[in-house]
Length: 99
Image (cartoon, rainbow, N blue to C red):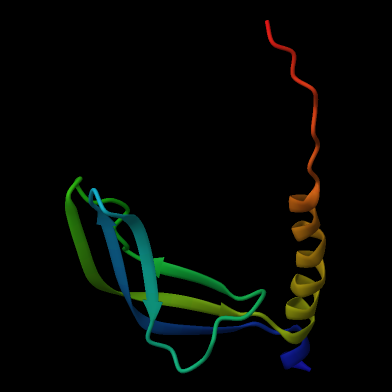
């Protein structure tokens, strides 16, 4: 029963990489987990840096808490995600007048 409704909480080590250089601006987290993150799962990285000075790259080791979704929550997230995706399809074209 707990697999359907319950959530499991797992702490895993991770690597946080932040770079802000002329070539790239990015932030990545790589979990050292033996499982894949799936729909409905939540990841919280503890004490992660949020920025680096321009022209620098920072790589640090931290701990992340992964809250694994139960089966029903995972199915609901997949179902609801389909409707969220359709919002991206709504495109309108309007005539612009030049002044």
